[in-house]
Amino acid sequence: MTTLTTEPMAPLLARLFEEADAAEARPMAELFADLSPEARAGMMTSKTDYLAFYGRMKDEPLPVSRETGRLLYMLARRGRARAIVEFGTSFGISTLHLAAALRDNGGGRLITSEFEPSKVSRARANLEAGGVADLVEIREGDALVTLTTGLPDVIDLVLLDGAKALYPEVLALLQARLAPGAMIVADNADWSPEYLATVRDVDAGWLSVPFGPDVEVSMRLG
Image (cartoon, rainbow, N blue to C red):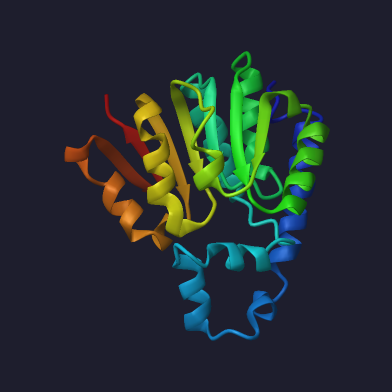
C-alpha cells in the first residue's frame, strides 16, 4: 500500500485526470482563433512569448499523462529522492505524484514553479486534498527568477513541464546541483531541440532515452 494508490490520493488523481480528459476534448483552436497555426507554434517555442502563450492556457490542466505520472513516482521512489524540483505546476497533477513519492520515501522537499496565479491556487487546493501540501513549496512567478535562489544543495530529480523553449535555461540553473545519477524528466521535449541536443550528449555527462512519443528521461552521469 502506498500514498499514490490509496485514499485520499488515488481517488483525487482519478478525478483530476478525468477532468483533464474532458478539457482536452474541447477544441483548443478556440483559444488561438486570432492566430495562424504558424504563429501559435511560434509562440509555443519562443523564448520571449511564452508568457502570452501560457496565459491563454490558464484554465487548461495541461497534465502529464497517467503513464508519465506513474513513471515520476517510480523514479522518485527507486532513487529515494529527497529533493525534487519541478518547472510548471499547472493544477498539480504531476506535483501530486512526486509528493506522494516523497511521503513514501519518508519525507523531503519539492520545489515547484508556476507563473499563473489561478493555477497556483488550484494546485494548492489539490495538494491539501491529497494530504501532501506540507512537502511542497510552490513558487509563483517566472521560473527563470524563482529558481535562481533557495534551492537544495543537491537535487535528486527534476521535472520539466513548463514553457518548452526554456528547458535549456532551467536546466542550466539546476545543473550544478544535480546529484550523480539525478534523473530529469522532460514532458513534450520534442518541442525543444536545443534541450534534446544537450541531454543526448554523452560526452557532456548525460545519458538519455525517449519515454513514449514526447517525454525524454535523462540521467546526470557521475
